[in-house]
Image 1 (tube, helix red, strand yellow):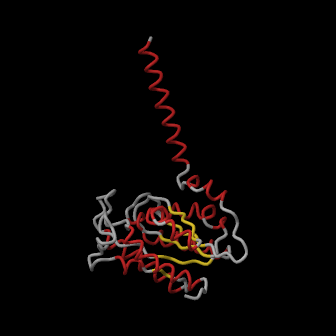
Image 2: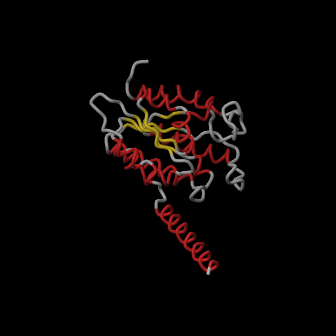
Image 3: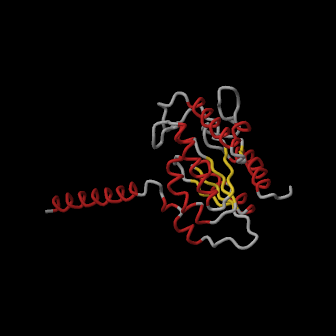
Length: 235
């Protein structure tokens, strides 16, 4: 009798886990991640210059590790670890447009190169970025596009052997698009790369992909200068 009860309990637990996993998979873009925070964020008041950072783990960790930088400048972090530009685009309305920022900073590419959700296709990645830009502009939001950070390997996907070339390809496409459309571009790559092989400077990262505090300290004045210029703030 006890054995039967145990078996039933195990099956029930497995079914419950399967239901949970299924629910998570249905929220592929992870709209739920910031749903409550978005609901609690008040609408901008007159004269407020809200800036939303859209990105992956690099943005996600940034807002967590250096919250004072975000708070002091009225920046809102909307990064989700592991995400690709495909997922950014799906949640762009909820996590950017509906927050009514004056500016959005888009940092995409790392996980596209790492094939987190799709096979690497730089033209589609660029298309996703272009779609986000068009959505932002249609809603009166100024856009800044940031470069993908340097990387030579992705620890979670060691099958990728040409990471530096992929990053350079993405960055060229995005930079050319930004220049052609007069969109402000933030070049993190040049400040963070260690050499011609495309390695991230080890002084700024522990894993060659994600910045440490020291890395973010390098990135912060670079992006802030572009944001201030976009907002036409005096230095």
